[in-house]
Image (cartoon, rainbow, N blue to C red; front, side):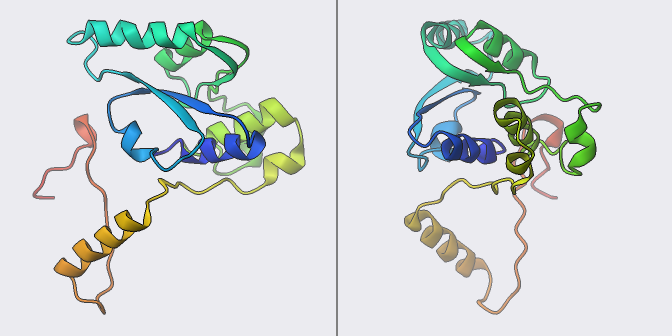
Length: 182
């Protein structure tokens, strides 16, 4: 979900481009199903040693394709850097964080995981202060009307219409996963 601003930015800069995503896990097809310019989602299994064939298959798929531009969307990710390096593309943006970068001092939100890659890509491609300063696109999983209606129905079953609601999505992995009691 945190790469949705980057996907929106790439779509704005290159409206006719198709985008392949190289991701870990199985949630990406659900999250990005309403993004019309997503072409292919190449999935690494979460547990690569348990699924070596899938793991190597994903890397072979990535290596066999030709791209105009490859972007490592997760700063300082070793697998992201490796995927960017191994990919067949003339233009590669590694997206690594650099606190000494002038963008870090210019934009208070430069280190935000969903914004850093957009600022960096703009700087890499455009070298234009006007473009760099435009607002960053919002996080957006582009819910369908049916999904929104289903969510409203589920919410209305647990709260009354006049109640104020704060919703927290607490599912994560590892030490970021809150207990159900929380």
